[in-house]
Amino acid sequence: MVSKIKHRLASLPTLAKAALLLLTLLLLLAAILLPIFLIPRHRREQPLPPATPPRDNCSTRANAGAVAFDFSPFLVKYRSGCVHRMDGTDRVPAGLDAATGVTSKDVLIDHATGLSARMYLPPPAAAGGKTKKKEEDDLLPVLVFYHGGAFVIMSPFEPKYHAYLNALVARARVVAVSVDYRLAPEHPLPAAYDDSWAALHWVAKNARAGPEPWLRDRGNLSRLYLAGDSAGANIVHNMAMRAGNESGGAAITGILLLDPYFWGKRPVGAETTDPATRRQYEVTWSFVCAGRYGIDDPRIDPLATPPAELRRLACSRVAVTVSGLDDFEARGKAYAAALNGSGWGGEIVQYETAGERHVYFLDAPASPKSAKELAFAAGYLSRE
Image: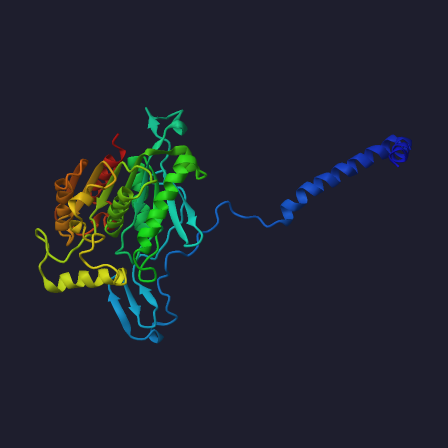
């Protein structure tokens, strides 16, 4: 059979042979190109799932029934179970920030829970007005950031947090992972703690061996920092405590607590003694944890932690910032003092801004005080 085909081909005129060869090449080319045009094209990065609860999951608030819990100015929960969020639901896309040169992208960490994060990478460093030739070989400190919002609002994609991370990453020159943990009341505590712990493990795993390239190729896991504001600062402390009590995690170099959300049953220092204010903080804490933990639980009141346990805080450096008009100022200071008095052997740095309210630097990032606190935070994270 093969010999017959060869004989027939040999007997064909030269022009016919050329035409047959051209036809064969065209058929091969069509076989290669056809799937490209027929198969739908997909973006490299798939859009993130709607992990952050929507502004309003009530079809109409008129049909939502009576108010079950009023957590203004953050949210209102109705007896029907629906939740109306008043803040923290706006989103901005990832990408190149023109003002700082920082690049960001979104990643999905856990399909089962919807746990995701926004990652940030600073631009190449300039030396003498020229871009360093071997910048790609330079490893950067790794920052895991947890946003605030009383455990009930906000996300890494919210405009204020996105702008803050762009500014911090550009100034500190770190590769950052801003975690989108699940929020209460749909997911009461400890969901946020569990998500934050899972994200920390994901960061450590990828910084060691990938596959996430920004962490694998640019991150220096020996300089791992955790940072957060308000409820995020609360998460930072609890992650460092958990790391000290569980083996197998990455070593944390330092933690940065910005206006930490800590509270307790009894006032400390200059903390308010107003019964209504103290009761309100106790009630809202019970709301975000669905009554699982009391107001004296170490998760919200680290001063309730015995000194022998506090010494297990798994890092060598701690920075705490407080604001003078913040209800949480006194306990933030008391936290630093308790850690120092526990026998914990690391370095503690305190930074205070007089005359400002809770996390003022997010609402007024261009103010001189905000710029000064940003410089402090960046300097702390970038110090060798």
